[in-house]
Image 1 (spheres, rainbow, N blue to C red):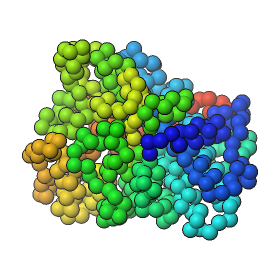
Image 2: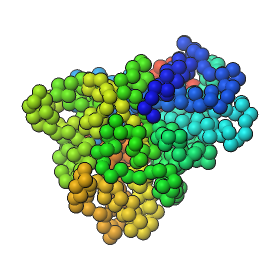
Image 3: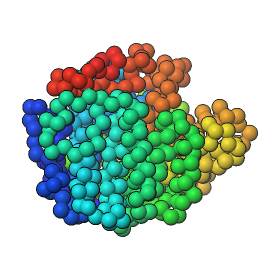
Image 4: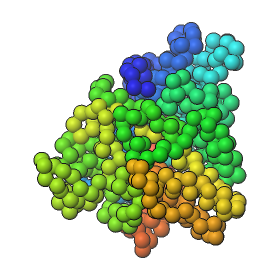
Length: 501
């Protein structure tokens, strides 16, 4: 949706919404459903505004998705002259005063409050279900999307599913359990699946559809280990892919060309940034700057850089490696190979190769950051079907669709990666699926969630094949981030903090 409408609305909403950290000291105005919401258009305005807040520097423009990438075993710190807060996240020695966490926490609650206000405002209009429920469903999706990210990062945390017009109403709110939060997420996504359209107007992929809701339900159930439900929801999306307009793009590289982002049919849900529009933290995208080759790609910082072992163990015959990593740069007419880089390792290339209309280093890019794509649904189906001991041919079939696309080097078909053998055991299929997820979704902030839900931390950080050894990784502490200490000072009911913080 490459226009300024959602950014303008988002900016206005940010001025009207609130983060938990400001509840006592700096209360600000919020949407009051009884005064702001008079028409469905007002509800839509609030929903669109929430997308503007999602597409901001504290969330998907840098802080939140960078924290997820650094936490994984696929992305390490490159330039260690960067801020200590990033190094702490990466090195598993963060504390409850970590600056990255304190910046993205309140902004997530701005998004949630906007969704809650839109839902309450829509309900207050007293319209027929057919007229207002699709917009209410969109608000519920935004809330579910936000809490699905938050609960995986923090575990127990405040669950707010009502509109807030008086910030003092939240002054003493306590934490809800993960189980309660997941129940709310599932209820919201089920409502969204029922009432959202199969396609949005102009086939916009930065607004959800019924297929989007089902895809996230599949991911939620996979995270919970409910493989039957995950399988059913993923299969629903796959069986109805034509209805929703989903397909694998023929060329993997086309997923990362920002100028073509609105035409990518693999996208199920994305955060839409608009090129060279500067409205403060909103629309401020610094992921290309964070991942670029410092000194050889002007304007980049070289912070988020894979370890050399990630590159060395990734087969050169895999086109996804060619697209995802850059090991050679032409700078001032001179070819520079990665041993000559300031950080002498190949860097992430997905976000710097084609950021579209942008500033130096790719800032204020045209990227639509894809949070869910059709390839992931196929991988969810593969993992769930393997866990359920479905016929190996079925599991292999989902994996082979993804692998077949990976064999296409920009129109030149190759033989790698080969189709999955149907003679593998259940354990072998699951391990293969997890590694296919690691490569297919590399640097898309999914790997940390996979490590956490499969409890792989001891293996990937302390095992003999670790890409990024971390002897201090502690599974009793490090699968969760700390709640910001500033929040506990304001509201002691949020104590105790997560274990170890």
